[in-house]
Image 1: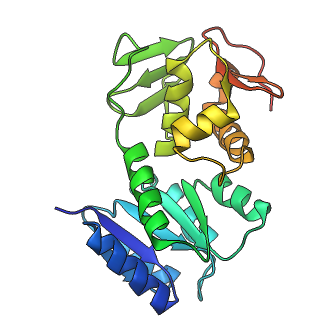
Image 2: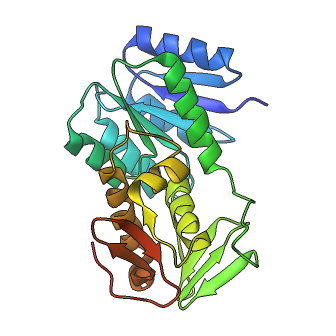
Amino acid sequence: MPELILIVEDEADIANTVAFNLQQDGFATHIAPDASSALAFVARSSPAPALVLLDLMLPDMPGTEVCRRLRQSPATRRIPIVMLTARTEAIDRVVGFELGADDYVTKPFSVRELVLRVRAVLRRAKPDHDTPDVEDEVVSFGNLRIDFEGHRVWVSDTEIVLTALEFRLLTTLIKRRGRVQTRETLLTDVWEMHGDVTTRTVDTHVRRLRKKLGGASGSIETLRGVGYRFQTETVASAD
């Protein structure tokens, strides 16, 4: 069965063009012209959409609110979200990523590039079975425990829900523990993108990841002006 992409876009020409190209690439699609119909569709869909393409400027509700609601619900919080918007200000990207968006594409965009970005996000969302630096499927570092196979994380026996991108960021740092990862390296290896996503994106996601990890956040060490490193011994957390 082809993966289903939900397109939340009130401009019919854009929505239809995107849907056609995704269908040509082997995806199934559903178009929702506003936030209400999008949320209703997700609520009744089984299985849930594989990914949501979400316009920020919707007639009945900001796309950021749709993103927030999807991330708050246990049933939908792991669905990858790619935001579509005509806004180009850095603050809009930061807000989108803070809410848990996986990627951000500004209009006008190349439809072919958008399809490739969708595939990249879906690829990142799938469990990563290539764990050469990890000896066991479940590993622990102090009060932090990670199940690589099950995509689950616990801090002091309390499960922490991470988005697919946050989980990939954490596990990438863990697999390379003790080694400094520059922001550019993380953009390439975690986001699979170059140039068009600023290094500030990495900082935003690390900050969000640390907040979720709480007492285990100190395992992610900041090397100012360089990047980040996962330490097997907890150090003082720094933004």
